[in-house]
Image 1 (spheres, rainbow, N blue to C red):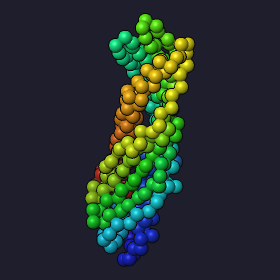
Image 2 (image 1 turned 120 degrees about the vertical axis):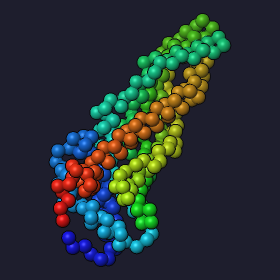
Image 3 (image 1 turned 90 degrees about the vertical axis):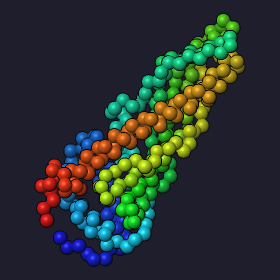
Image 4 (image 1 turned 90 degrees about the horizontal axis):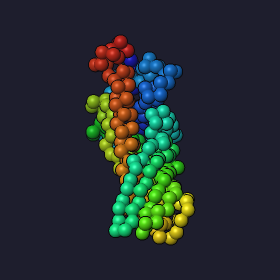
Length: 268
């Protein structure tokens, strides 16, 4: 194995971007069962020994690059995963809230658009030679979040019924993934809701007077929107945990020579 003794930042970046691509494709291979990508093909492009050699010889410091074009693979695979695992749409629990002489009952709730994700800003990849860690900053935005409920509002024994629809614009979550070259494993280091978005409501039904609209609007903004934000955050967290688990299993298969499953691929 002939390994150059000097590595430019461009060579280093190519290796790091290749690792990012491997991560994205390994997720697709395991979760979506993509048959045209094999461990052997990946092994022909990337060796753990080569990566270690490059990292050890690269001078101390940190390098950062944009990988917007590579992020689309990740978004596409997460979108497909959400759809195939019945995460979009999601059923919402029935709710009932009693006030002094009125009540609100919401039924048949559903949340859609969790699969409609895109990058909210530049996707960056950074490598720290001191820590030997690669970090991917993945800001995502949901482009078509919506929810709907059937409502029954009782005010002074009068009970108008109908449906409400809500659209949430600009809901953003920031995800940071870290690849540790000391362990050759991926983990989520940050997953935060950076913007809960703007809520737009539409009401349908008989007896939709101002007082009903005001009650439903207040309930939607103070109760429903925070609740839906929690649901979205938990769903993304669960998917992120699954992605990390699958990626680590896949990485073990072709980057970790200590793994019996991949031992046959590491003969130098």
